[in-house]
Amino acid sequence: MPVVCANNCVTSPLSEILYDNCPEKNIRRLKPYKVVFLDCSAVPFGAMTDLTSNSQWVTALATANPVRFGELATFAMPKPETEKATNSICQATETVVEKIQGFTFSSFYMDNTTYTDGDFVCDFYKAIQGKTMVMLSCDGNWMLYSKSWTAGANPGVGGLVGDAWYEFENKANLGINVEVFTDITNDCLAWVKLPTNTFNTIAG
Amino acid sequence: MSMKTKLIKLIKDLIKSGNKDAFDFQVFQNFKSESLTLSEILTRIATYSGLTSSDYEAIKKGIEKAISKNATKEIKQEIKK
Image 1: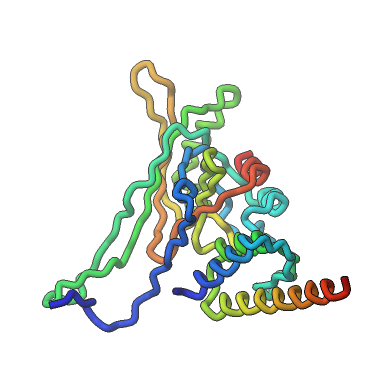
Image 2: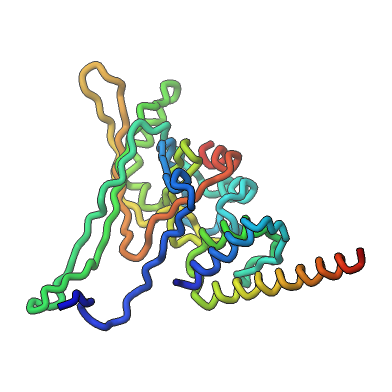
């Protein structure tokens, strides 16, 4: 008996990945460099029509209160945690009803002059809910942003919760670890390759 | 194949063919029309969300229409020469 789909219901379309003919062009190598937190408001991005535009980012960042974290020593994006619901005991069908993406990252870079790293760690878990986040990779000038971005919207991944803490063991350097979570049940992650001047503007 | 995929393939093919025309591009009412190259339009299409299949189809038709107009112009110029 041939394998058939479970039912005839209409599902969402599955997009095709449009690969380049040159295999090496299909590889997206990342070296996470900085995470940039932006104010949740869409107002600073109200005139943004092009994520790659340096001048549009200069304008937006002037009022988006960017908080840059890095240079990063580690960055991990593990498998999202999903919550499933059973729709029918008899047919054993399960549906994902919630999908949470976590990010963990760290940096050994501190402010040894005015000690503002202490403020960052102290403020983080309360302030993060008012921020969105983009991540920059120095290899390839890639930026991680929200898939739901469109002209005039805030490009950062939103709905964040998380915490930051100091970590130290023995004679090593003092580090700051950060863990953030975002609900991607109805949103997704996206990547865009930035021109170098735009990348540098966002990275600060 | 989704309409977005068809549109992206059309633009990629036009770029490969060496097309460097500029197109008046306006997708959202709240934003002014901009003169963009196909590479710039490709980036916009690839990064914008919230566009429907009919939006992609309208953009595809717009590009095809603009290309055919430019082609006519080029042909006329060739005749003059």
